[in-house]
Image 1: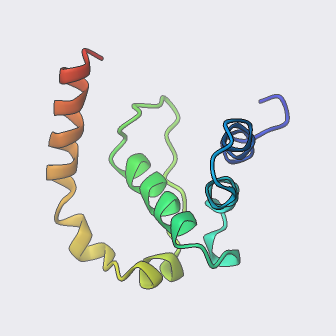
Image 2: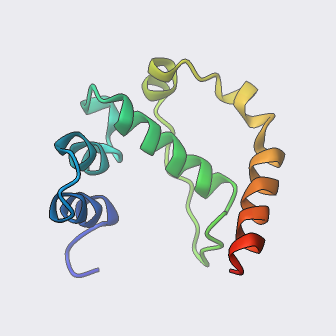
Length: 102
């Protein structure tokens, strides 16, 4: 919308909020973490894929982005092993929503 995706908008917000440049760069790069050498971009990328995979945002047209194998390898994540924790992640997310009243 408006010619920006959330990565570009987030990067601009991080810059406007005077967050460290590494944060802005990582937010901008998280859709293509293989083009970045940033662990932070890899973490944001994997987090986004996880949030979509678990449908945490309950979006009507939810689409799970492709997961970068390089990002997982760089972070030392084995996705099949990590998937065993999905129920715990969902439970904690639900607990946070209840605590915040949302």
